[in-house]
Image 1 (spheres, helix red, strand yellow):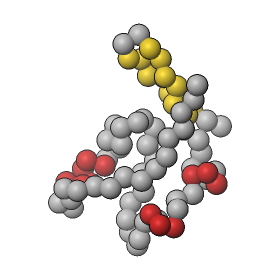
Image 2 (tube, one colour):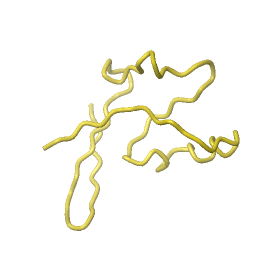
Image 3 (cartoon, rainbow, N blue to C red):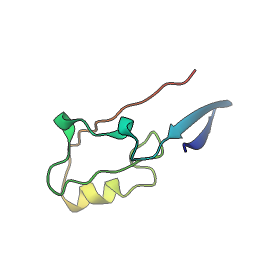
Image 4 (cartoon, rainbow, N blue to C red):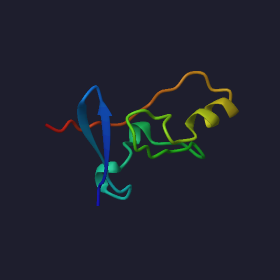
Length: 76
Protein backbone atom coordinates (compact mmCIF):
# COMPACT_ATOMS: atom_id res chain seq x y z
CA UNK A 1 0.00 0.00 0.00
CA UNK A 2 1.64 3.28 -1.00
CA UNK A 3 1.98 6.14 1.42
CA UNK A 4 1.11 9.52 -0.02
CA UNK A 5 3.04 12.62 0.90
CA UNK A 6 1.82 16.06 -0.12
CA UNK A 7 4.24 18.91 -0.56
CA UNK A 8 3.03 22.51 -0.87
CA UNK A 9 5.29 25.03 -2.61
CA UNK A 10 4.40 28.37 -4.13
CA UNK A 11 0.75 27.43 -4.51
CA UNK A 12 1.50 24.17 -6.35
CA UNK A 13 1.03 20.64 -5.08
CA UNK A 14 3.13 17.59 -5.89
CA UNK A 15 2.35 14.04 -4.78
CA UNK A 16 5.11 11.63 -3.80
CA UNK A 17 4.49 7.88 -3.46
CA UNK A 18 6.60 5.60 -1.32
CA UNK A 19 5.97 1.88 -1.77
CA UNK A 20 6.77 -1.04 0.50
CA UNK A 21 10.45 -2.00 0.66
CA UNK A 22 9.81 -5.63 -0.22
CA UNK A 23 8.42 -4.80 -3.69
CA UNK A 24 10.66 -6.09 -6.47
CA UNK A 25 10.91 -2.60 -7.99
CA UNK A 26 12.81 -1.58 -4.84
CA UNK A 27 15.52 -4.20 -5.39
CA UNK A 28 19.02 -2.71 -5.31
CA UNK A 29 20.98 -3.20 -8.54
CA UNK A 30 24.07 -5.38 -8.14
CA UNK A 31 26.30 -2.58 -9.47
CA UNK A 32 25.43 -0.38 -6.48
CA UNK A 33 24.56 -3.02 -3.87
CA UNK A 34 25.86 -2.30 -0.35
CA UNK A 35 28.88 -4.24 0.82
CA UNK A 36 29.19 -5.77 4.29
CA UNK A 37 27.78 -3.39 6.87
CA UNK A 38 27.08 -0.45 4.54
CA UNK A 39 23.79 1.19 5.59
CA UNK A 40 20.72 1.37 3.36
CA UNK A 41 18.13 4.06 4.06
CA UNK A 42 14.53 4.31 2.98
CA UNK A 43 13.58 7.92 2.45
CA UNK A 44 10.12 9.39 2.27
CA UNK A 45 11.04 12.83 0.94
CA UNK A 46 12.99 14.01 -2.12
CA UNK A 47 15.79 15.20 0.18
CA UNK A 48 17.78 12.26 1.62
CA UNK A 49 18.58 14.23 4.78
CA UNK A 50 14.94 14.91 5.80
CA UNK A 51 13.78 12.66 8.66
CA UNK A 52 16.75 10.28 8.35
CA UNK A 53 19.97 10.00 10.34
CA UNK A 54 22.07 10.26 7.17
CA UNK A 55 23.84 13.46 8.28
CA UNK A 56 24.78 11.95 11.65
CA UNK A 57 26.02 8.71 10.06
CA UNK A 58 28.22 10.60 7.58
CA UNK A 59 29.69 12.91 10.22
CA UNK A 60 30.35 10.01 12.62
CA UNK A 61 32.42 8.27 9.95
CA UNK A 62 34.16 11.44 8.72
CA UNK A 63 32.63 11.05 5.25
CA UNK A 64 32.74 14.22 3.16
CA UNK A 65 31.92 12.83 -0.31
CA UNK A 66 28.71 10.94 -1.06
CA UNK A 67 27.29 9.07 -4.06
CA UNK A 68 23.51 8.53 -4.02
CA UNK A 69 21.86 5.93 -6.25
CA UNK A 70 18.13 5.63 -6.74
CA UNK A 71 15.20 6.39 -8.97
CA UNK A 72 12.37 8.87 -9.34
CA UNK A 73 9.01 8.40 -10.99
CA UNK A 74 7.39 11.53 -12.40
CA UNK A 75 3.59 11.54 -12.32
CA UNK A 76 1.51 13.71 -14.60
